[in-house]
Length: 458
Image (cartoon, rainbow, N blue to C red; front, side, top):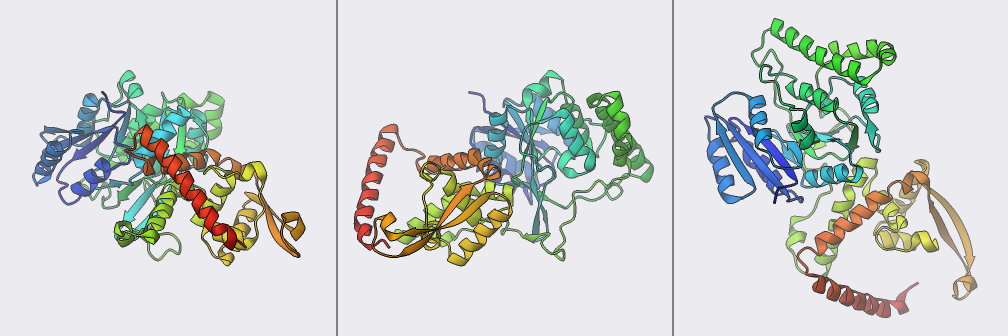
């Protein structure tokens, strides 16, 4: 059976980084993939490392050739690929564990021809989130071209490794890398691919770790005159792309903007520790998990693992929306995606009850509600109810009536996907009969807990 995704990694003298790169691919949550490693005449131990992976994992295919450059390596791998989709990784970089799963899901949910994702840029011990498009829907060629026109030389648009391609388009139009150039060959391939892509989607969750260690064109041995010739050739591709996408009138209106490419720096933005908020230490870009608690047995460790597993699948939505986990979890709960009945019955809670339910402090809940209100995602109204209305004793109680606004309702699909991923991870390996039995037992456990706690509820 053919794999859904072919991941292509050109390898040349990468022994220092290769294990981290390959492990990040083979350990993807999405397992329906093949990995093509192309050993481009390496003179270090890279070839041996590739052979070991091929012997260990049947999904790994090793191609070996004399050194002829990264473009030739990618072209060879494309010709051998069997996957419906193509994904590219550089041998000194690595993937987030959910990278392929999130990109494939985005591709298949929207039916688009290209997914372009945010990424992490790594510089020494620091990492920063990089992206450019904040649009969530499907974009046409023209809409995507308008975004690219704003930052034409940004790595986000130029590279291969933050994108997922349809192999059928690549083969139908015989798209390949230009072997004659050693700079911007990725961008030229992308421009050719985009001419045939009818729709494009952005994935605003960073899924790729780009290690910044490459030098400038001159430091790579290219003289100044060759640099200029190369840039002019790339600009010709770029200019032709816009002449193809835009009609004559629109092209003339945007011609000066198109010509920005000639003066823009071909950079991906610096990650400098001294820039406040611009970077964080590598390893802190996603929610941390205690290794000891993951291995530990016992009630508290089990509760911790359940919560962290849920947060793991909810986190891409939090990152995409730029929200802390507490706010994202609050929206998730109110959406009803996890099986709660909030939208149907509009339950009222006191601040104390809601804070306990979400496992956060009351000040943290207050801050979350304020933040979501300011962003226009919820409407909060405080309601005073009499005890007799609640079937209780005397007195009045202040409760919150919270309504999700349209901008938050747009996240319903993300929340349902997170809930589905969470449940699938918990039930992985269960047979249908075991799932049915587990559901029955879980309901019995739930009723036992309600019975015991009913008398202590405030």
